[in-house]
Amino acid sequence: MSNENKFNFSEEENSRVTNEMNKEAAVEEKKEALKKDAQGLFASIKNFLSELLDFRDDTDRDATIEAIKADISFKGATAWILVCSIMVASVGLNADSTAVVIGAMLISPLMGPILGVGMSIAINDIDTLKKSLINLATMIVLSLLTAWLFFKFFPLSEDTSELLGRVKPDIRDVLIAFFGGLALIIARTKKGTIASVIFGVAIATALMPPLCTAGYGLAKGNWPYFLGAMNLFTINTIFIALATFIVLKVLRFPMLKYANSLKRKRIARFAALVAIIVMIYPTITFLKVLKQRGYDNDYSRYIKNEIETNNELWFQKGIPHYNDKKITLYFNGEISEATETDLKNELKQYENLKDFSLEIFGNKNRSFDKLSDAYDRAIDELDKKDLIISGLQKQITELQGTVSGLNQQIEAKNTSGEIAFSSLAKDAKIRFSDLEYFGYAKMLESKDFIKVDTLSVANIKWKESLNDSLILVKEGELLIWLKQALKTDKVSINRN
Image 1: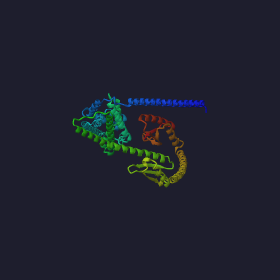
Image 2: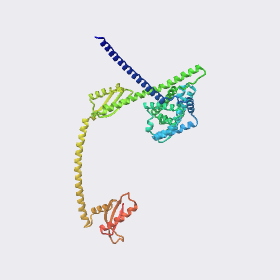
Image 3: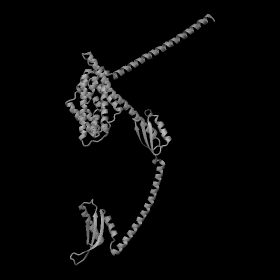
Image 4: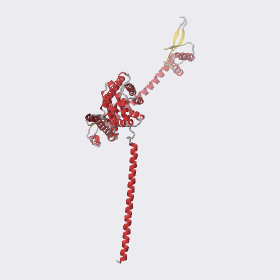
């Protein structure tokens, strides 16, 4: 190979390498540019979310603490406002009126001591905690006493949907209480409290209706109602206090300082212990409610998907026993072993019910074949009875014709050419539809006990709905008609 060819080959190779390096550099530059753009986008989104959701800069810590402490006190006007609001709520529950219950919650001062409990634990203020608990206990006792007096002596006390809705808390009540408490304390910490939010939370967390329902349970001696309503009130109270504690910790409210460091540590430990103890009950309740909700959902889906959609099953009712982990099903008709096995296998496909046992009861006396036979026999008997009734009706019609003919013969012999009674009675009923009874006869009379005259007498009875003035008018018209029909002026009408 000549030197010239070697030189040309080297230049081409160098040019190709240079181009590849330039392309790689351009790609790297694009990657760096995209990376910077992405970082800028993420930074912008982060700043936007921070400005949107961060409420720490808008917090007035001192004013919030003072406002919560001011609302803890429970005496004088506040106590009377609570009594009045409890009375209004009790009336609303008794009348099953949601609007009245909401109105009572808007004027209720129940929130103060509950927020005080959450705040005092958050900032280690033992004195405020004692004051809050005392006022909360006073508030509960006064509320229960007021509701008890109303439902004890009010004559129209009965179970309503508003009352029954507060005797069995579920997972939704826990969520409502917690997020309602969050909204309330966030509104409280904001510079310039948002009144509408506080009112909305007062409605959502619903502290008053459970207390009124508990009073109803005491008045009626219904302990399940009382315990269920107090359970709901306790859940609402604890989760509102928990929400207050969490928000104040997030906002880093200043801890109360004590001159004695040993006392400060002791109080901090006590507050932490109280917070842990208080959280044990709602945590257990939450888990129970969550588990119960899982049972209910799976049981409803099992009945709907596996039983109600099976047209061969004549389902009567089902009774779940969650504590015993057993479900009892009742059917009309016989249940075969294959069907029973299928139902048990299908139950194991539901996560919350897979450990449950299944009891199935079928009514052998109500099997489809037997019911069909009974139905056919009943139809045959009805057909026979219809034939008998038809024959009897025919005989009655023939007898009516015979009786009518005999009446006409008797009247023809007795009237000697006079108008027949049956014709007279029919014409009277047609002309005077308000007649209920009509009788006619001839009688002899003597005014001087020497001369004897013949008098036509009609006995009648009018409908009771007619008034006396209308009866007199109709009797006058009847008298005129009878004189014309009988062709005599000597006619008398007697009213029964």
